[in-house]
Each structure stands twice: as structure tokens, then as C-alpha cells.
Length: 329
Image (cartoon, rainbow, N blue to C red):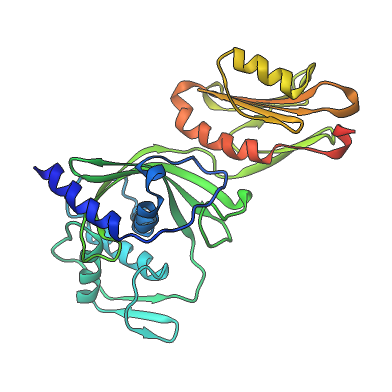
């Protein structure tokens, strides 16, 4: 009965949503309802991002579905919503002023349950730059408790905007989180936050640019450190046996792609002197080496328990692997 009621309310919300454009960038591809209904994701994106930022501010990893959070978390949500212009209240110049009662009322718009007390007034400066903590939603599904979304939480250094628009080197992936939202038609997003859980903490805190013999460059997470190995132009190794290597091999990108496909890998791209293939725990990219013949091949590998984290890193690795003109001839 609860599931049916939620489905009916969600159906009404989806009908009322406007059409919005999609953006492509080195972020985890959308799946499930997130891929089928990007308009819905755009509607709840702000609420989820505010919740992710407030959780980081308050140092909270989990909130049980339907539970009232601490006043510190609720207050942090309101402040983040004001700074991001998700909420607007009385404005004096570049500042928004709210008393304790207004803060509680604002929190009640975004939360399924609110704490009984502990609120104080807020004065938020909307003109100042703020650390951006956001959430890229990549999967969503309707569950018994509401709309469940999975997101990669990130921070942006010196840049304001979304993960899709950010320069790669300013983007730091922080953690994976699951959020549960319940329909609330009077809320600005059409939903309220019911609960969340941190699924995994990501280890990298910066991207490092590596170059190899003037032939190529690639961005790699700082958890991978350089280890000299004979026969490889670049070798990086990290925790759990994760690695990244670049080497010259015989064969064209097209022939290598055919070989990788025969091994059961999924071919992402093949053509114009470049090929890329993926399998669980593995990324391979081949680029023509020019007059020297053969190809430059990048291989990134990681263990099964690191699939969520390193499959995300691999998107930036693939996007940033550049072979210079001198290598192409």
C-alpha cells in the first residue's frame, strides 16, 4: 500500500517536471531511473547536493530513514541551501537573515522529520565564494521507503558549478552515498530528505599530471605512485594492487581492440587511431604511435573490492590520456 501511494505521488511529480538538457563529462554514467528520467534527477539534484554538503559540514555519515537529524545537521542544510540559492529569505544587501523559527521552518521544507529544538538564527553571505560540495547522481530507483538515489559526492577547488562543468584537476571525488527522498508536493524540489548513508570513502584527494618521454600525458589519482619498471614508459602503483601502466606494443589500435573484444572486454571506442576497452577491474586504451609503428597502450587495473572507486577514477584517466603530435609522426 505504501509503495502504491508513493508510486502515485511520484507519477504526479514526474508529469509536472519540465524538460531539461543533459550534459556529457567524465562522470559516472547514469543508469536506472536516473538515465530514464533526467528531468527528475535535475529536480532533486539541489536537495541531494545540499544534504551531502551538510553531512560533510556536520561530520555525519548516516541518517536512518524517517529519523529526525541533529539540529547541527538541519542548520547546516539550511545554511548550504541559502548559500547555493536553493532557499531565499529576507535579504539585506548580499546577506540573507533568518531567525531561529524561520530556520526551523526552512529545515521542515527539506527534511522528512526535524529536531524539536536547538535552532539558532542564520546570517548567510550570498556574495562570498564558498567551498562547493556537490553530488553527482548516477542511479535512482523507487523503493518501498521512497525514491532512492546513489551519488558520487565531490568537492571543487576554486571553481563553482557542477561536476560536469568543472575542470578535471579541480574535481575531487570524496565518497559514495545513498539518499532516500519522500514525495512532498509543497517542497520546492517536490521531495524531502528522509535519510542517507555513506557507502564508501574515496582515497584520492588530488589529480597528478604524468608525462612520459615527451610522448604522452595523463591525469592519475594521487593514491597511485610512480614505480620505475623496465619496458614501461610509466608505471604507477597504489593500495590493494591497483596500477596504471603505459607501454609501446605491436599492432594498431584497431587490431588491439579486436583482440580485447575476443578476451571478453567491452569496446568503448575504436576508430581514428584510438581504441578503448573496459572490463570489471580493467581499462585499456590504445593510440597510434605514428612512424615508430605499433601503439601506445595505457592499462589501468584494480581489485574487485575497489570497483566503485577506481571505475570512477578511470573515467578521468581515459579522458585525459593524450598522445602528443611527436608520437604520431
